[in-house]
Length: 347
Ligand code: SF4
Image (cartoon, rainbow, N blue to C red; front, side):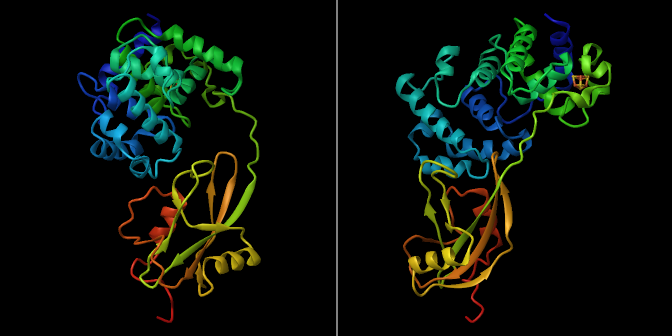
């Protein structure tokens, strides 16, 4: 066992996280799998509530497999990266049909499931079955980059190959559940992105970046691209009851499968054409302040325009009883709306 792994395991006994809701003895692989998928892009502190709610709605893999996609997306709403929820649902169906509801335990079977990559498969097998599998999530990449002063950014295949080599090198042949949790905990609580707590770090004695005070230079950064900006208007139709019009988005593209407002280009001509198309009697009541929502590849400026609409019921939803998967900006706007009426000043 490397000194790195030994030091980490000793530290874990005292400082590791052992009471997270998905940790149990013996481990429940469904819980481990779900938490690993949720943690792919999200921090533990945010995941805890979503995890608890998800398990309450879908207590078993069979419950998840038999649920409608809409229900799954609703439980996921707010966590973002919705393809994770869709893949989770698809995988649950495969596990039910092809594995009689029993989660597979071999690496090749896991990696073949939608949404499970090399690192997630390694984490699930280490945490649930104590198998000696390397993991390389964002936290582990950061720890190993600093500890070994790895040159280059992860997006470079040579750098990534080197990180996998190091991850394999340090993976012990025993105590794998503890080791996997320990290295993830180290990255999440000590070797944090900004201002790592090196004085409390169990592997500091051999850390190449730490020993020469170069922590801030690792992981090395990728040349930053400037994200382009786009803009659109959200048309928020409200009827006389204050209900809002929402439409389900296509299953491909941004916010796929979620429910959103009608949108159009943010200019007078496009807005008035879209309003006429919806209803000749609809008219603008007010605009909320424009705000920015950022995606990985671009920033989106959104102008919410509130429009009073005749008393149509089809497609209109009571904002106090919404049980639909909504994109974060739609949720944000709904939270700002007066829930009792359409907001018309002359009513
Ligand atoms: S010594 Fe500092 S930089 Fe090195 S692994 Fe520990 S926390 Fe990270």
